[in-house]
Image (cartoon, rainbow over all chains, first blue to last red; front, side, top):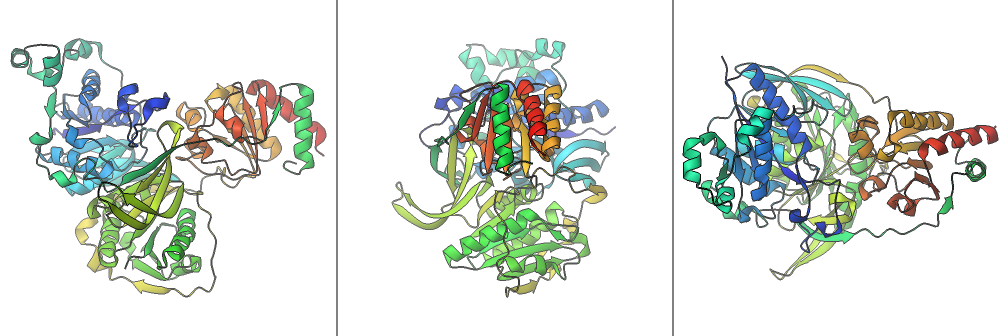
Length: 291
Length: 339
């Protein structure tokens, strides 16, 4: 029976629904440390598509690859609770300040180290940037086909997958050869919930750095329970050209960041009282705005 | 060389509105930079496609015409654009922030190692001084977009890499024919030189495209709901008001994300941009991403329980109160006073 090697690209994102004033640093990059961090929603839709393929072909392997600071190991644990087999955290100060292209380069170089991959599945976009660029940029870096805006993997066979895409004005079903990169829309099915047994098993999954902070003996732990190891790769673990990394490797620069100052209009403030609503409607009718 | 380029999306023989809007913007940028405006159209049966492109002030239109090039597919369109850009070396390249532009743009930027900024709300030419390198850059494209949480506007530049690439959503720029008889040159590309057979690996099994039945963009009155509307039942009131006034219903991203309204109704930076004569914002706090899609409305009514909601500062009428109480009254008094 077919077994797919699937990598899910995921990002830990600041919850942009709860943003405070100190969220931006002076250089225009995001101060992630002060914000609640979550699994990027569309990456969870991507994980679900991967898990469905694994449901059908149980020998498939799903690994999560994420790039971010040390605490991004949280989303790998989250993925393990929901059914992923393992994960790699790509973390290094050398990646700091990366724009989408420098991010794609680093992720692409990490993927090149991961052996034969059948499918790379990612969320269409992350809620902190909304660019939808990293998936296609990674695909180009690897010379792989990409299919974006995917809502459902309809069929997977040895050599191809058939997927349904949700576009602005319609749907498109396409059949594509493997390997390929798929990016998944938020309109795809939600990710399944955490599994209680898997939480018990994987709540102790750690990166080496986390174990060192907790003063745990990681060689003993990893020897006994190799599946609790969250791999941690730094820039030294992948082949890179320093000129393509981080701020230096980012063609786009943030020139300025401005706070938005609202210029208050001369508003009419009215209450919900009947006579005030009626007066407003009469005004709008008289000015031919309505009617 | 060093011109402004626009990728033209084509569906069913029609050039997309967003592409024509970008042609108008591209013409203005080219005038300021004293360079040419160029465009590329990729598809099938494009003999007359120039009629929908050149009048916007296009100096050179490149056409790649082959029956395999429609509908859009990632790899063949990428190969053609990348190879043409390698030859023509544009300084600026613009694409729609649509499912096509957002599929193609990043791929092209990755191949050319050029920067790409998504969903710009404004494009302006300006200079830049880099302190670290003590280097002055002239006539860069400022790619301006709201970012991150709604409190800031970021200006992004690509100082060293070309082309400077940006995507823009439909409706953000205004399209305007420059001259119906504009004299532009048409260059037919030898498709085989730009794309290889191996690029055609995707088989399109089924395709259903329809013009969206919902026309929020063209509606003279938009009744928009946010998360604060609270429930589907309350959202129905918005439809009732829109129907009475002859308008359409729009929604904020929060309302769409929480399932109160469909994606096709989303207004804002990552949705559609509207300029109706009346915009009624119901239970919408008014983050900048939302305001980017509606602040040019001629008149704005804000209905909100929060008297400090940011939307209130751009509203002509601020009604502090509950949507479920106020909308029925608006319907009632409209019916009473209109003929």
